[in-house]
Image 1 (tube, rainbow, N blue to C red):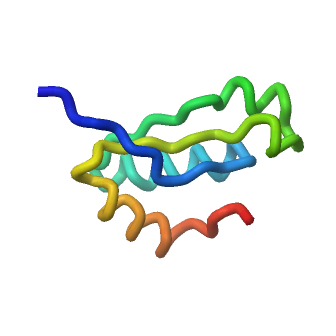
Image 2: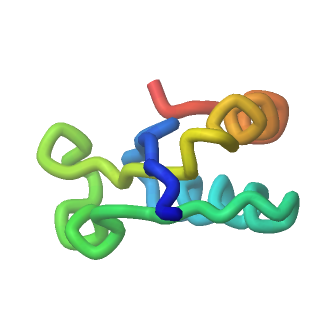
Image 3: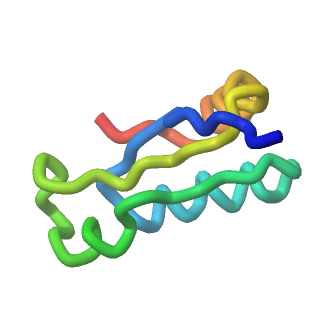
Length: 75
């Protein structure tokens, strides 16, 4: 059975996005980054391309709690 993915956060900074993904991975929560290559090309232009962080729907609340206690969200 395939789990539905949900976007839990977006980032302008590839470093912050990668850090958030690593935190989730460390806690056993599979996470996927989308648009990381495009965001690198358009770095500094957050309105053009953001990096999206996805997890499975059943892990979304846990992932958000971990990130809220670990990583400051972009404004």
